[in-house]
Image (cartoon, rainbow, N blue to C red; front, side, top):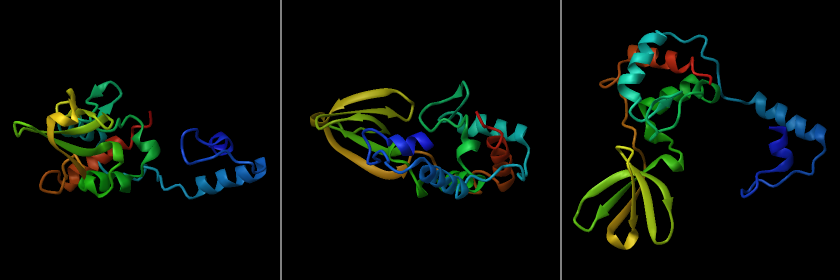
Amino acid sequence: MFRTIQRGVPGSNMPSSSAPDNEIWAIVAYLKGISTVSPFEDNVGDPEQGREIFLSMCARCHRVATQGGSLGPDLSRIARIRSRDRLLRSIREPSASVAVRYRAVTLITQDDRSIRGLIKSEDAFSIQIADTSERLQGYTKSELQEVIYEERSLMPDFGTERLSNTDLDNLLRYLGTLRG
């Protein structure tokens, strides 16, 4: 973190810092102090049952180590970077906060087919997406009727009718073990 603050991030809005080292260390200490990632030690639930739930309901799109899909974020280290509460919200209401690279897009072809997926690359003339089956597809925009940029996630909401509170606790307990 110190080096990132000191050197900045090339190609981003974050410039290098000319602050003395002791001030940068103070910033690092402050940022670590306000970290919202809380430990998972107090979790309820069974991690083995949670793993089974992950494999049956999540692994189509999410990867842990070498198992699973790649349409959604890799969860191999999720317990290091997300709190239990934030994961709970992300599962129950995934569209409440969606990173830009995981926002859905729908392409409408000239023959009225709808293809939904995630943008992998785009310029003024073409768009490449990974569809919901993780197939990479490329189109020139002139071949499409419409490109619909959504604010939503491709991930469905997992309300209590789809994932019980007990199953959610089990899943969260399993995810809490994933520290890379």
